[in-house]
Length: 476
Image 1 (cartoon, rainbow, N blue to C red):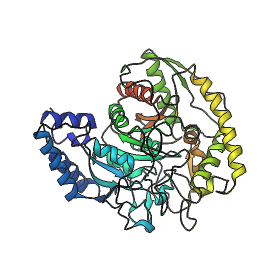
Image 2: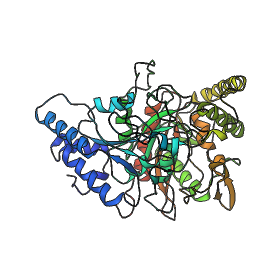
Image 3: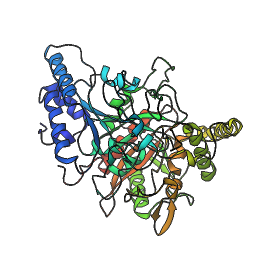
Image 4: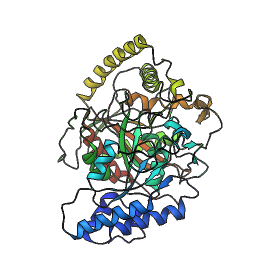
């Protein structure tokens, strides 16, 4: 039996099992989360809007439905929070921007509707940088969010509040967004699991990257879950995947019943001069690859034969084109990007430049497709260092980070993320250990298009082999 003292940091699947067994009620689980937020979040600043009254009403209704024996969805009674850049009906949704400080949507984003239909109890919103346009999480509305492993460091961005809420047991699971790493960086920095799904598998409508936004899709941008286990990601994906009424659905493969242990052939790509990886991070990545090999997987130092610098530059151009015009007053837009318009080098009106970039992407896609015909997955870094110290006083384009004594621009460090995102490939980040300083490190598990469940299955094995999610110090 899971005690109520530890249930908040248990995986969502365990929390749902406790709800089904009657070990606790939805109302009790919600109160557990609210108490933890009151106790711990003052110094962390992850949850920026809380609807206690609405959450309690929904939790009580969920408990009544269960007691009455009514048909229940897969997330029935699970209290969750949502990234503040995603529309939630009746709940302040700001995108971290002063222009939307009082914005209360009258409808849910389609992905949020799916979570509600599955029985989730939505009770709060988590912090983001303004217009989601940074790899840190800070804005003038709500201030800065701190990393629970070291409050002097960033939790990453733009789904920084999401990752902190999951890591600290403030929520059952989270819904975030990612175009340039906004699910993957915070998962890596905070020690959580995160899924950037295949582009188009989960609806991205309802996204607040500008005033008047939320009605159009952005190239490369995706919605995806952050959670405390690989099984949680699988559960959330099953709920979230599918059409939104405006877009055709894409079918995931293999089917949901794929075996839980799936040894196969995995390529490893850990070194790239243009996007260096810190020795401590690389060591943990190498250990994870070795453990997979010892577990029966064929693990080889191999990767698609593409030019990393060329494809990273392509990602910058297309991300820049995707988010151009997204903000007001030229402050830089996000669309879950973690990078602003200035990184792109292509203006919103440069149609010919975008057309050439998209043709180049098709050529790269052919190389990746051929490679995934021979390999089941690619392991690669998320970000070349663990969580770095807060650096909110300078624009993104002026910031640098130290990598083994080498000063590297933040925007260059996003290369491992853009490499995958620009291809629209699925990527799961799984925690694989901590550095000597106690900072979490994650790995990207990349699979072929629509093979999201396979990436989750490999994350499940690494979870068993490397320890998975751990509770940050002082929060037990």
